[in-house]
Length: 241
Length: 35
Image (cartoon, rainbow over all chains, first blue to last red; front, side, top):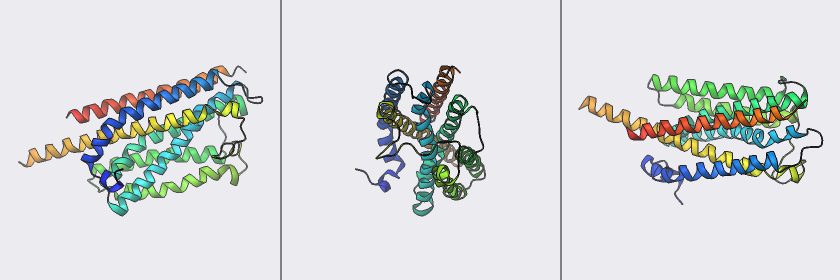
């Protein structure tokens, strides 16, 4: 098992990432398709929400990855600032776009769920507003990274922003506890759930599937960023030769 | 209210944008590794 420091070597990382990318991608796609198919056609409608409950199988994974993506950015930012891992900021930059997309999908699927369930597309309640803020924080991180790269920065400012932004994660997580929100309280936990097993069983498949898919996308984007950095370094060497 | 248009919209949006992200990421990776 390679250590974290060993993986910080770009050449070693690429040797592992190249074969791992298609494995993660295709196993993720297969799990998502199986879980979504089961969620759409194999589970009964909910006694209160009816067929709308089927949105659960994609809304929960997109929300999990919207938040999980920022956890990845925060951990990478800490690794960059503390240990100066050469791949840490590349990982953070690679996570930003899929993280932002999944946060947006969480908001969109939640809104689509809300219209027939709550009778409204949107409410400025704690959970929805804090998730929207996370989406804007992602956009800010991407803009900051671009500005930092344009000015020849060393990535320290985006890394500090990456750590500071993680303050939103507990706010999102506990918003349904701290405030009286339209969004339901936590109904799914690791050990127990208030949702019936006959409805819940496809969720682990879509949850794991989207997570593997997300990891494959991050690896693809890291490989793209490393490739671009190598090409730029080569051009610089040729220009100075 | 018929719930199916909402269910189809949520799944369609998620799958279409995930597929677009995957395709774009793969093309960028392929181009960058070719250089």
